[in-house]
Length: 241
Figure (cartoon, one colour):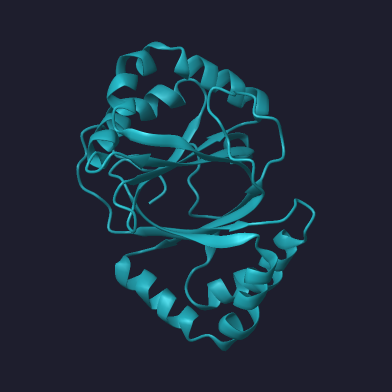
């Protein structure tokens, strides 16, 4: 699994109202295999359940040189040339992107050979991929250790075992045609079988004295701006589902 995930892009696009399904149609039909043919791993693509005009997706690379090579090959290649107009027409902003590296990846995070529904599949999974992005003060702030020792145990206790924990990869953007946010973050994702399972996790978290009285105040103290919570529905062809 390491070969596909040493470098990870987390991308969140703001779209013109009502255009998300149009982007997903183009993406799932044409852009998944088109990108993977150049050496990327399209880990997951999602509808944001709380932002109807946001599309979120995750892609991985073997390493930074592979990232530059794959992005150059794709964005100068025939697949993007053929479909960039339709994709870009749906977008208001595509610059909300973070360059990350894994802290921990567990079973449930897609491997390269994970199954993917064939082109043309329309059935949307009922599962929820949820998590958070914490905005940190610096790469050496001890946030990773705090998360492992204090945050993750409460998440697990309340039904949200993280299958992916990622942090900012401090490196120069080696494909500047696609801007990256200049921020230091820690992000985590967990999988829930359905909306009811996610709602039960939130109920338990809200009722956890450890979370409410100890962990949450310390999270807020360590963060430089409010947490971004994500509640995502995989598309029909997402591997992460």
